[in-house]
Structures are given as structure tokens and as C-alpha cells.
Length: 77
Image (cartoon, rainbow, N blue to C red; front, side, top):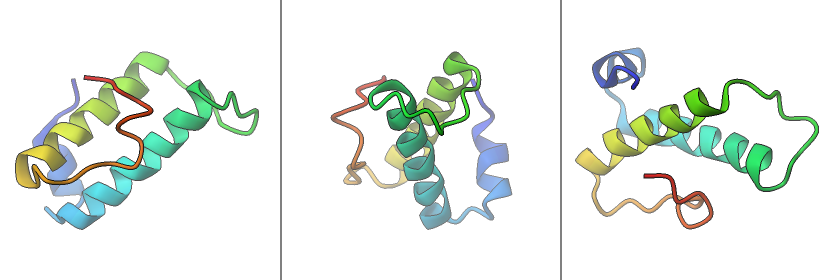
């Protein structure tokens, strides 16, 4: 699991920045898994999924009302 405090510090505790990071990573993961996009650099799948999970946990803890545009298509929990 990724260090939530470090992610917060690296983004200056700016929830909007973390949400943008989440959406960017979800978009990349979606392109990799769903669209099988050839232009997406394929890294470690487990690490990518765990990073998105961690980002979702951070966002949901502070904004329980937030719904990601990819949440229904990438139902990772």
C-alpha cells in the first residue's frame, strides 16, 4: 500500500490536486485495462491498481460525496 501521508505532503495537502491525480491515474488504468490502448506505458499492474485504491481512499475520507468518472468502470476496492 502507498503512504497516504506522503501523497498528501507531495500534493501540499491540496485535495483538488489529489483528485486530479486520481482521475489521471484512473484514466491511464482505464486505457490500459479496458481500451487496451497501445500508447499507454504498461507498468506494474498491481502497483497501479494499489495506487488508485490509495488515492480513492484519501479522496473518499475527505470528500465522501465525490464520485469519480471511472468508479463504475473500474470497480476496484
